Image 1 (tube, rainbow, N blue to C red):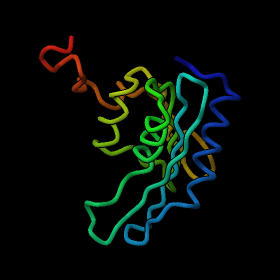
Image 2 (image 1 turned 90 degrees about the vertical axis):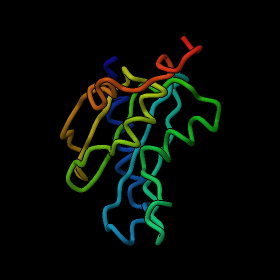
Image 3 (image 1 turned 90 degrees about the horizontal axis):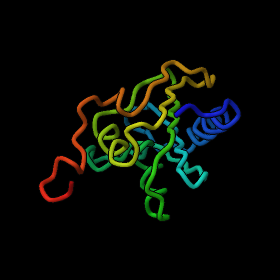
Length: 137
C-alpha cells in the first residue's frame, strides 16, 4: 500500500516531533516513531532506556503497543526518525510483522528526509507469523 503524500508526511512529522521526548541517556540515540493503523488513527512512540539495559524499549514497539492497547490490530504504515536514518532492530521488525507485513515503512533522518522506503516484509523477509503456529491456520 502506498500512502498519499500528505498522510505520509504527517506520519513522518509526528515521528520527528516526538523524538524530542525520547529517554536515551545511555546510548544518546533518541528515536521517534509513528504508526498509522487501519482505523486512520496515528500513534507515536519514543525509545525509553533503562540502566538495566535489556529493560528498555524501542520507539517502534512503544508506538505499536500503544495502538494495540487501544484496540487496533492492523498496521498500515510506520515512520521512524533517527539522527542518521537508522533502521528498526530485529525485535521491532518481528513485532511490526505481527500486525502488517505489507505495511509501508519510512526510515528518516532528523530533517524528515526519507533515507529508506520499504515494507515490513521488505525489512523482515521470511517473517515468523501466526500461520507458522500449529492449529492457527
